[in-house]
Every structure is written in C-alpha cells, then in structure tokens.
Image (cartoon, rainbow, N blue to C red):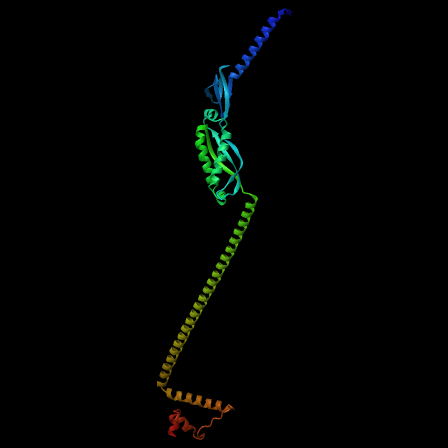
Length: 316
C-alpha cells in the first residue's frame, strides 16, 4: 500500500527517525546548562557522582550526564514547629523557634542525608526537649541563650556530616499552660506591688532623712548665728566701754588740766554750787518728797561743809 509514493514501511521509518532526532535534540538542549549565582548543580554519570557545576555555562554529555540535585547556597531560615516540652519541675510548655543555616558542601547535603532541612528541624526539636528538661519553669524564660547555644552546638556537630553550617538558632515563643500563666501573672503583679511598697518606703525614709538633715542644719545655722550675734554684741559693748573709758579718762585729764590752770578751782566750785542749788530746787518742786536742809539760814556753812564755798566768802 502506498501513500503519496511512500510505502507504509517508509512512513514508519521516517516517524521513528524523527522521534529519535527529537529525543536527541532534547538531550542536546538539556546537556547545555547555565548555573545561576549561589546555586550548585550535582552531576551524575550513569548514576554515579561526577562533579559539581559552579555558576556559569556548562555542557554535559547527553544520555550519560544528568543533573541529580540542585542546591541553593544562600542562607535560609527554617521554622521549627511548636512542640510540647516538660521542664524539670514537670510543667508542660510549648516551644518553637527559627534555624538559620546555609550549605557549605552541596555533595554532603545531597548524599549525606535524605533531607537536611527536615533533619535539622527534628534534631533541634529533640535537643530543645532535652535542654528544657534540665531547667525549671522560671529558668526557661531566662535561659534562652543557653537553649540556643546548646542547639547550635548539636546542629554544628551534625552539620559537618550534612554539609551545612548553622549560623544561629532563636527561640520564638515559650508558652506555658493557661493555669500556670495566670499564676505567673499573679506572681508578677505581687512582685510589682512589693517593689512599689519598697520604693515608697525608701522614698519616705529618704524624705524623713532629708527633713531631719535640713532641721539639723537649720538649728546649727541658728545657733551659729546666735553665737555670732552675741559675740558681736559683746565686742560692741566692749568697744563702747572702752570708748566711754577713754572719753572719761580724756575728760578727767582735761578737767584736771582746767583745775590746775589759773582760776580753774574757783570755776569748778562755782559749777558744783550751781548744780547743787539746781538739784535742790528741782527736789523742792517735787510734791511727793519734801527736802529740808538742816538750817536754811546757813547756806554758806552748808556749802563750806561740802567744799563748795569760795575763798571770798570765807574771808568775810
């Protein structure tokens, strides 16, 4: 049977050769690989590891070489699902976290473990449970760095065989049961009230100390001021007495000089006589007292007895 001059056998051969050519073309296209940056292609030849393709253009041998794994060399974060853990005081808490890792050996990551991401998550969960089991409830909230460091150390040891590097691990949440959470809230409230009471008492204590110190300084200042006032008054009185004494001494000296001068004695006697008579007249005007000399007719004798009589009167 012929079809357009070709037999069925010829048409069959053309279809077969066309299919084979298409397969060859596809394999040739697949043999040309362009590796992007921060990627690593693992090449196998006949099922055996051949090489690792770095970023750039590469040409493989069709039908022999195949890209078995494509690994990402960038740092990635992996979420560790929440899990239930028991503390050393038998309190159940729920813990989750984040792992930050990157590939350093794509070959080990491809052949050393089935899935390094799942393996890292499982290992971090088991390590978290073991670390939480050594801590009591209060310390689990304080020792986040301890938990992270323990998990990083364990993952670092396993990562050498898996071809990964663990950069850090962060504990996201530590959630206690509702009953424990309520008890912790009550404890925190009580602790805050205690601190407030202590702070108020310390403030009152310091306030009383400050007031007493102020009163003490006030009394000291007043006493020092009073002492200084008395010292100043005493010094002022002393200066006043000294000035009066000096003035009196000067007046006595001047009076002595005046008495020794010519006619001085008579002048003094005259002044004393006038003062005596003036005093007698003032006493006479006083209605409450009556002053009578011994003999009013003998005034000159009275003055002479007081030393106030002049020499002229004596001559008479």
